[in-house]
Image 1: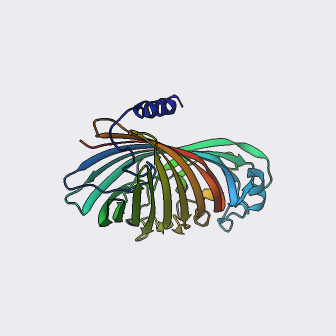
Image 2: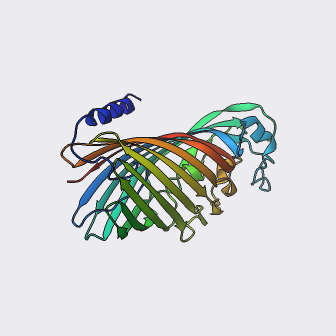
Image 3: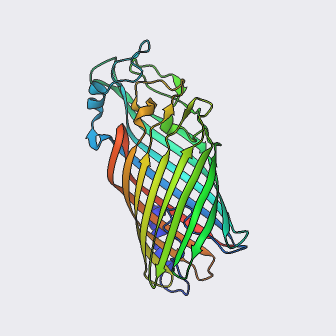
Length: 347
């Protein structure tokens, strides 16, 4: 928290006096929102922290006790498996460090690459035995490592003094692990080491096509834009499943507060499909192990600040996001909030 407060104070301090435009890019939570002029290189770093709490079944909050007494276990036909779920997640925190680079070989094409390091933590309640609502205990699982690598191109299709359009096209390369293990607490009070459920894995395991369309506009001290971006799985991975396709639509509005500081607000709509197929090593009476309880729709609202330094090389940004609407293929943990800090540097 002290780090976040310090970052906010730094942004406001930089916004007092300046001679350049802080509004040349979209909010820091939007990827691939701008292209560059021929020969330009830009390096970027982002840190994102996301918190998830409360289980939703559709749009309604559902308690752990209700989950374990009413939600069927998809593995109930297997030997020694209970009829209902017996383990429920209660919260999850995800930290992501993202390093990116953009380079424009000419005025019409900008290439972009991004690598990330992910840390996931999930807390659970285990209920005793094959039925009932008697709590046995709590446990936490954690995974950490590199995620998938994204390589993409931004292709300019139209530009005027006040408007820019470009196509986003790229590929996600499966470098993130999909076989992370952890110790769990079972309803029979044992602690085996097992392959962890899908949300705890670090990558997709598949080559994924990334496609999108972005428009950004500027008029005096106002800026606005919109972006559609989709991630489509091209195949099943080595564990015989593929994550669901994801479609995002973002629209944002910004206002230049001074020569060095701008504020922004953003609306994000996400549609996430369920997993296709199944990892035969992920078997447990918990919702996160069910491929059919991974999708849903989310509507998020974000606010941010963007600042530049007088040397025209460094941009700093912060954005805080919270959900306005969630309808999940549950039970499933809902998003509580997220915060993104970022800096972009042109050497």
